[in-house]
Length: 413
Image (cartoon, rainbow, N blue to C red; front, side):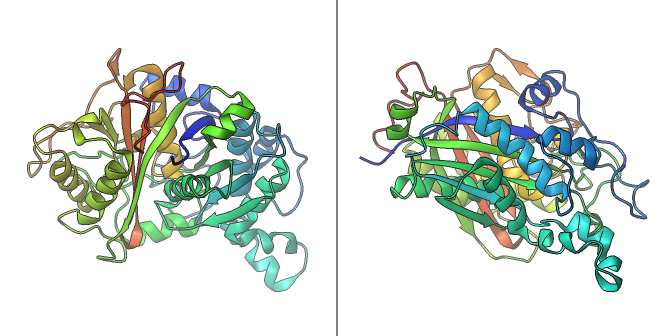
């Protein structure tokens, strides 16, 4: 029988909170974190709304619990903060005999510091400590060193599906018997490259984004980090950790329709969701809530909406995008939004799709537009779709005191 996979810890930092509790409070208050740029020097700083973590680099060092030093990017510090919270949450330092891995996702790496010190690299040696920090794997290595993880360490970069793919790979590593526990997620800091690149694509909204709205005009970029601890059921017996929920399904597709756009019919999104459902052994009717990728772009929302309609047919589950809260955290979005979806399971709530007014006429469903409380939420799906058509879906279920999930005991998974 294949190993079941439980979530036993998580940590997050975003523009709506420095930890899990603060993020939850902001969500319950329907309080978004979008605002003007403060920590990136760019000609666009007064034009764009972003989901920036409201902390300076020195303040992030304090939150990370380390002494300020050369060679630490903003991205690495965000990752260290969220990863430490997840590790403490699941007592990851205990039971060193268990095979433990780290799978971390990012795309910009330490670009935030390299942009700042590029001229120093060319003219003097005063900032050379940041050259290695440019590499995407640098933040992963710093997290691994901080937490003492060495059994397996790797970095994933598949654009906006990166962190979801880190979770997916972690699950597969546990299923294959290579690891007992995995710390998986992603981190991403805002950079000039980030902002100017998306601006060149003409998909940034200068006002709060409006996913699934007829008047949607684009993305608000964000930054942050989020990590989950995945444990096998055998590991759970040794650690005695109480599971937060169970990861029962995951699916990835790569439709390669276009470098940046989704296919009009949403075939890649549909395949990712269908694969996750097939692996879980669940039916479409078992899904209570979909935390949609929902970027707010004309292309994505219509494409994803059509995929949802194709998969779920006449019974569309509750759907919303949480990007109006956090901004689009790109490579960290998959783990950030997985945690927000899991919070729905824990607290029996559905997060609102902020700023929604008018349904997309080509779609038959509107998103949830207000906070719903005391609603039965047993199974959730979290979607993350990346450039190049690399699309990933994850399915989580509630578990009871006997570690049975809401759809049974998952022996068929």
